[in-house]
Length: 281
Image 1 (cartoon, rainbow, N blue to C red):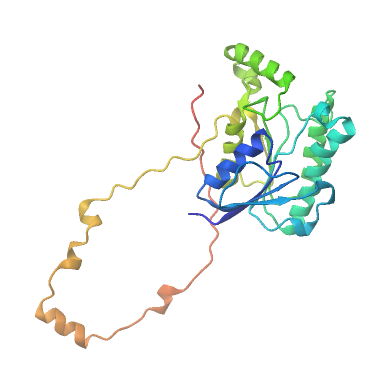
Image 2: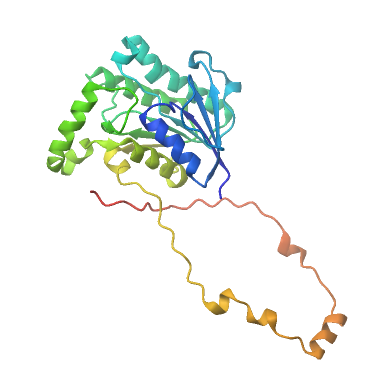
């Protein structure tokens, strides 16, 4: 069992909800903290919820964690205006990232969008691209940018445009091959799982961008059970009856403790881990 701690903002949305559940069920994590404006429905012994106003969030509201997961996102229609939309999708993530850097959190994972580009003619993609640019400029120790295509799953609120887009993408999915494969819709639960895989086994470079088609394939590495023979499993020598000569030697033996054997050294091992990719369905 691991000893990791995670912070999640945007935990009540489609991907955030699944992410929190999966983090709590993952043996590598012993603590999951949610910072939100309202309490999520999900409860778990590992989970701590901090109800905060993101407009007044302070450094003291963010404790140290190994990962900060940012799943904040809305729509212009839901936000009510472009200004309100930018506050949720740009200002809040950037402010939280700045606080996390001050707290020494080594890794931030943030969801943007497949078409994120600060020079895009599409307003939504332009805002997401601007967020990516400014997060890179912030100089975080490690930044993982998650660019999913259309997210599918059961939302609390009904979004007509996304539902229509989901149906269209399902119909044309067989045609989306080659470069077009990146446009396939993706389950929010798979994006959440991919984020945890990236946190535990992903690229250790300062900035890494993960496109939707890669997110769809990421899975936890397979674990192979070691083949232990019956002889190794059961130490027969331990149960041999000692001879009289053995007993005599034991009494007169000098006990020597090798203190060098017990010297503790701190070693950092950084090796590349290959992902186990799932086959496309």
